Image 1 (cartoon, helix red, strand yellow):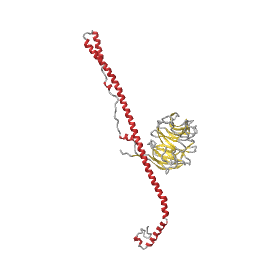
Image 2: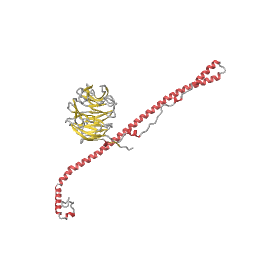
Image 3: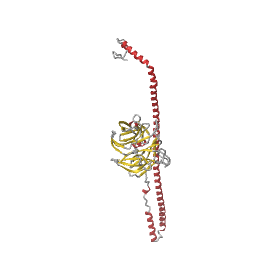
Length: 472
């Protein structure tokens, strides 16, 4: 408490001054007021502050448990990875051993064959030498000449190329590089270094942003729900062009724009002038998501229309197809390695990662889904189904960055999930405080754009300069 007269805290010295009565009266009034409101104040602390502190304590305890669980998961994953490396090394070692043993067996067969030939010639030579020693004096000149000729021929046949008997296949020790070993074993990364900072936003309509595709930093294609048009906008959200097309998805391949046309069951090419040319028909299948294939062509999700929309029975077709830009089918991804188990219930979006893996947004019901990751050869690598979320995980879009990390938009949990190239959750790149009901995402270099269900597009500066924790 400060004295109004001397502007000092009331103390015993100040209380004895000329204005001490005034100070004590003021102090007493303040204390009395505090006393009268003490019960309410303490109740508020008990009802509001203490539960909030308890809630924070529980969250910290939960976070501690979750951190320990995640640490155990990472250690188990690292152990499995280590065992896989050892297994693969053992397989390589066994192949090398078998190659050397096979080579030795071939070499031994050749040596034994030459040895048998030499032993036979040796016997022939000894027999002829003995015969000539015993009979040379009684032979006619003609017989002597013929036997001597045969002896000379036998002598010339004893030359053997001994180098051919040496082991040709040898083991050469490889160079053990610490850098290569670290790369093979894996790395400990600090995911705090992967960040997305908001640098802008723009409101473009009020409908759900179904599609965002960045052609350049200043050329963005955008499509809204129930819209008959697709717009080309700049980074500020200003319209540059409008095209009368209704793509389900769109991508850029070799400086050309391709999109899926559900109404006409086709994949079409969009020219800069707005003219449309059909690349291929997908009838009777409905095209969905589309992306550029790294080795050339397009990857497109397809589903049939002969069964109910979300029911995938034995007769339904739900797949990803790799097609050339001339419309030829290169490969289809529909079943697991057993050739019977379906990979997808309803594939809706597709993206190819920098490591050639294929990432597919797959809806398993109207309220649930997952992200299916395949190798380019069609092997199932992993399935991500979310982790400890308030609502069911139903991904809407997927993108991959330059380090092969995977970004997935989670509309109902209002998050952008950041996954490792293997499909393991690293963290939530963005949460409900930064994005609201995200539906579509587009990543071009360091510009991450997120569209939501209300026509809002947020722009983030994306930094994936992951810090490596190297303790070697």
